[in-house]
Image (tube, rainbow, N blue to C red):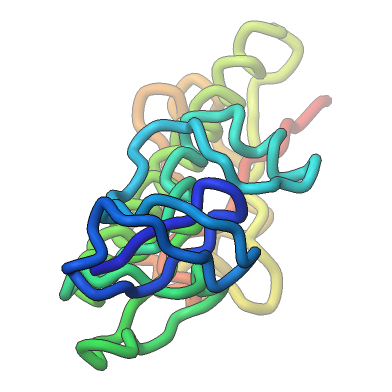
Length: 196
């Protein structure tokens, strides 16, 4: 069974018959009672932490970084939390790392899709917010589309520098370009005000 030292937090194997008995920690060499190791689900930990890590743990998003690293395939406790994608030493499955979370390859693909969709939605919301701010200023009637430079697709380059009536863009926005084939996977064009 796996057990964890309450003093130094080292996780190590002991024979099952030692459960409840006093054993010597392999890390700090102190005596401890061997109990089955369970992953911590709250933000309380006995691990010695750096100041920067303590600040990070104050947010709920970082709660998954606390406690032992568990293989998402075989549920084996890993000796060290990986800092990048790697294979599980027990089941040899590829463990994917996303923002400190240990995921299966399928979970990582789904996670990446969600992040990408959230990013596209945020960009679209920011564009609409920009247009509303321009309209509220009552200073401009037109906006111009600026393409994202040399990495822009042909559809975006065709709109680069073109002017559009602001009130029309609020009701039927040109951006994001519907047939954009950007190498980034989403339209990176933006609106800029035209002040006359």
